[in-house]
Length: 255
Image (cartoon, rainbow, N blue to C red; front, side):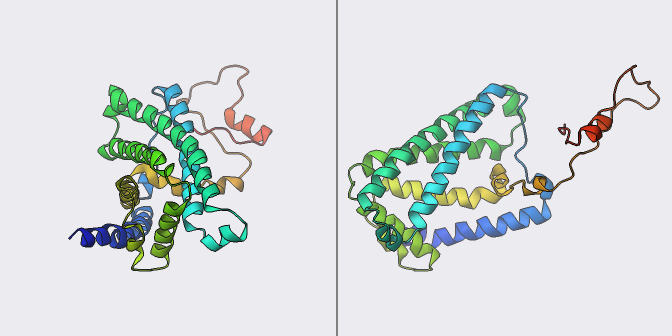
C-alpha cells in the first residue's frame, strides 16, 4: 500500500498537476480574462506591502530559477563544465538559503498584512488568503530541508531529485522510484509544490504569466481626459493634462 501511494503521489500526481496548470491557465485566460489579475490593495499598509512584496518576489524568482536549472539540467552538462555534486549542493544550500529566507520574510509580512488587517481581510477572497498561507508553508518546508541537506554534502541526494524531475518530463514512469528513500521533509516539500501547480490557475498566481511586453511598443503618449463635470470652467492658467502629455510626448500614469 505504501509503495502504491508513493507511486501515485510522485509518479502520477505530477502529470495531473502539470496538466491542470497548463489547461486551467489557458481556459481561464480565454473564458475569464478580467479575472487575470492580482487585485490591488496598495492603498492600505503600503510600506509593509512594498517591503514584503520586494523580498517575496525577489526570493521566489531566484528560487524558481535555481530549482528549474538545478533539477532539469542534465547531469552530463554539469560534468562537462567540471561542476561537482558537492559544489552544486553547497551552492544550493547557500544561495537557496539566502533567497528562501528573503522570500519567507516577505511572505510572512504579506500574510500578516492580509490576515490581521481587518480592512484588507474584508476585501480578500478565500483563495487570496489561502494561497499566501500555502506559499508561506512551502517556503518554511524548503528552509527546513537545509539542515538535512547539510548532512549530504556529497550531493548524491540532489542527484536523486534531478533524476526524478527529469524522469517526469521525459515520461519515465519509474521516476518515483528514484526518490523512494528520500527524507520525508523533501517529500512533503515536493508534494506541496505540486499542489501549488494544481491550484495555480484558480488563484492570483496567474499574474506570473503576464509579462507586460506590449508596453515596449505602445504609443508614446496616452490621452487622459478630465473628470470635471461638463460645463464647468477650467481654472485660469490651467493646462489640460492630455495637452501636457501630447507636448511632452510621454505617457501619463493611468489611475
